[in-house]
Length: 460
Image 1 (cartoon, rainbow, N blue to C red):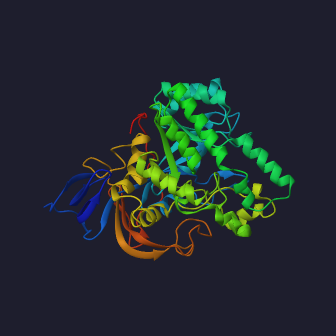
Image 2 (image 1 turned 60 degrees about the vertical axis):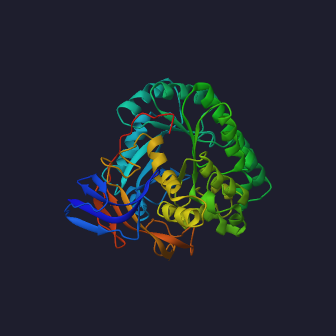
Image 3 (image 1 turned 90 degrees about the vertical axis):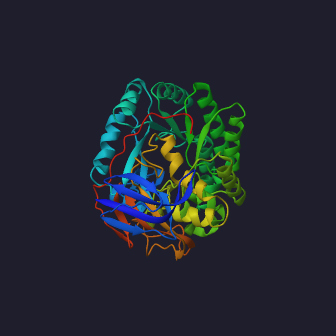
């Protein structure tokens, strides 16, 4: 199978040109103007933008949490991602306390193997770091190609590790060329506030937000940066939401430290006023919660300043009946929000179309930086000869509305119901195959491939 994409405006993180792209098999073979090559299939992309496939490095598919499973499994979630222009995701394996990393990997593989439509990889969440776990780090990196390890500074008794474990894990991960991802919020402060609000019978979704004030994230982000600086381990803060936390990272740069930062699309465009809509606010109960308008301004600025490298989703959907488990107590609402399908279009419409970011920056934060940070570049994250032919053909002018009635995520509501966007994903190629065309998915589960990743560079 060969494909020739003609006359598109090809955008990468560092280039913008009208060009043809010739694809043979799974990879890009040639890029240039007016290529005189015959192909099995020809696509006219005149008037369209052509991007590298999106990479969402923060998703939770079929994840057990708070007595429920996230409603998108590996088939429905990766297919929905493809409809939205995301050709690869990185999910999180969650080690159970008392169990090995290997047993966690096998559990997650039992759900993902032969079920993914799009490409995928894993981060390994370490919730119980001990001498036995320590021995598994090298194997995960060098044998399994899992080079990033997530830690939680919250969710005590379930996921959280203490600072001693964090320091010791960082030392081991650094030694073998890996990276630490962190959920940076102060779990003890949050637990105290949750208990206080519950004791006062303040139980609506608004108190989820009020239990996680900005200081809980700012303090933990600064503490994590300090530990990463001390150990020399590359560090990456997931789903950073607010001015205080980004200022902690900004302060770290004053000592010439690099801390990678990811935010999520919802924190750029939604705010905490949604929690005031009675129980309807449960749709946006996630951790960290939505923040204030001033935090949105800080995050957009952080993207342009190079402090925020990645825009992900933290996609973790629960159907409305599961959200209702917390109708009488905000602390029982499963945390999570559906966005895996909407990220690329929302970021274009709210970012590029409104003049907040350039097209090159759009590609950088939706694809290229994640590929570089997580050891997949230039195989993923760019349009170049030899790269995987993961390509999005995008109409920058088409207007459309988001709705649960038309999305492909396995969840019965949308966090963006009725939003009118400018810019639409039209055609998506995954490793040379036309995966999405005419709003139809042409590939089946099992086509998605596990992507082994290289050791992490501390410089992007």
